[in-house]
Length: 204
Image (cartoon, rainbow, N blue to C red):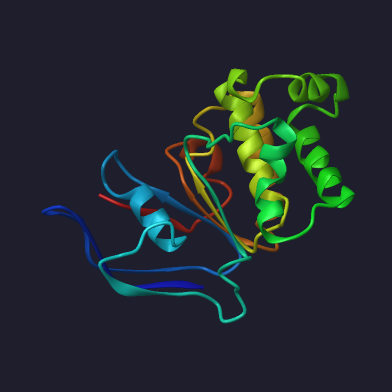
């Protein structure tokens, strides 16, 4: 369970949250939904320690190692001025030595979105990272985060750059991954994820 206790966060004179409390279930998928500007992304960043709340506490399972067990995928993919392999393996390189196993995990993740078509994947690797489509950058960003198999995964609007076919593939991946891990996802696409969970937090 993730427990939020009396979370407050303001930007300037505007309070986004004031003594906010909520509990997210254990393993499985939890969804945060609501209109633009209601604080969905802010809450996600607070929970993942990307930003700090002004006050309040976030309680995680005791076995969770915050430095190694948390993954975060931003709505707008963050790409490095490096080749695609370096982008994919960057997070690994900051924590441990890169091995062939890590590259194999990368390829396995990419194959889910490219229908096991190695020609398409090789074309991807031959491309300039900044000339990839938004959807392809989103796939790279997602794969990069999943390589180390975080036990707690935060996803901010992961479907926003994907076409319907790849969105369905991501739904399948989320469903599989959430069986043994915790995923908290901000999304407005309830039409494609509402059957995956009943744990939905609606912000106003």
